[in-house]
Image: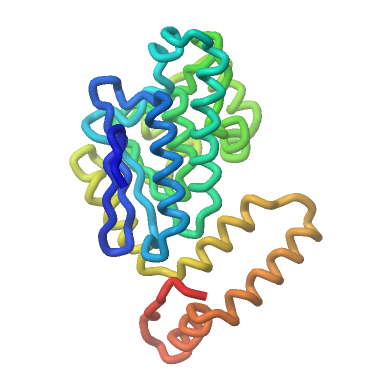
Length: 260
């Protein structure tokens, strides 16, 4: 696949996606939204992709939507609907694909960039990273799934604070609030994120996908108990489940294939 606003590479079971609009602070225009959608489809459909790493080039992660393209559009409402159509389709597929998603936030994550940071199954940040919702500062409302993910991570009160005041969080504040999993010195982030993605790519991909699905579908306790029972039974019957159990009993490291 050919991309202009992204760099997409696959190696050793890891699909690495880099946002690549450095002169525009990696802001999301229609082309990038469409390309993120195509990249997500590739990751979801590829049998060889067992983990995904999303980050960006340079010292900026993503400054959000491309406001200049909105201002230049003949119909701003239509332009925003087209962009969110593809962006939201990409986010849904990243969230529901079996391969775990690692997001490495290497700088400012604002607006939709913040939403992308929240999307990670595991999110790592550089010490220089900064997080801001930023939407209401330009009289817009959040997109990218953040009104769903953010309250679930930090509670409604804190989510409202970030969305209404546009308070900027440092990397360590984001860690303290539970928005990221780990913070690393800037020059170590890429190496740590790639190592984590490679480690996950060697794991039980189907089980990872089932965990993601269970966490996305919570409602009543009884319904969730039923989903958990069905899921663990399916995984235990699969190839990786059988290998995991055997390896535990034989006191050795499992060799997961990523298959059922």
